[in-house]
Amino acid sequence: MKLSVLINNFNYGQYLRPCIDSVLSQVYPDFEVIVVDDGSTDDSQEILASYGERILTVLKENGGRHRASMRVLRPQAAISSFSSMPMMRFCPANLLVSPRSTITTRSTGASTG
Image 1 (cartoon, rainbow, N blue to C red):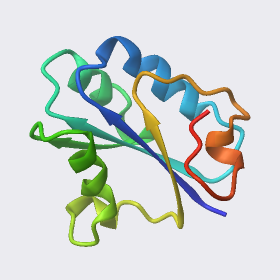
Image 2 (image 1 turned 135 degrees about the horizontal axis):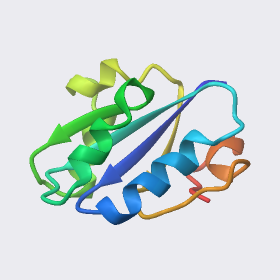
Image 3 (image 1 turned 180 degrees about the horizontal axis):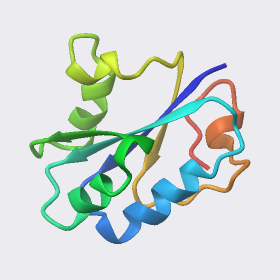
Image 4 (image 1 turned 90 degrees about the vertical axis):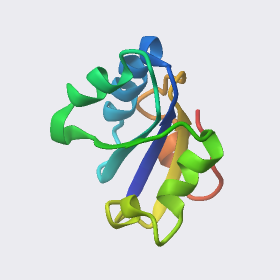
């Protein structure tokens, strides 16, 4: 089953690279990483840009974690066309996940680690 991993970020630049790297190191064979940056004012956007096409990045004005998540989940949202995977997991930007984490191995629920 295909999987989208959504990382919400707001001014977590100091944690962002380790978080993204830990998700990219997953052993799960078919997944994408979508990072929604909620108007960060730190170095988050530069960090996101450094990943190029390895991740999908959505930059938005600050509106809170819930609105950042809804940006991906609402069918009318621009990013919904990017999320092509039938299963989605959420991961806060200050979390590290192991390569065999429940973020990619559980078939139900929204476990992050």
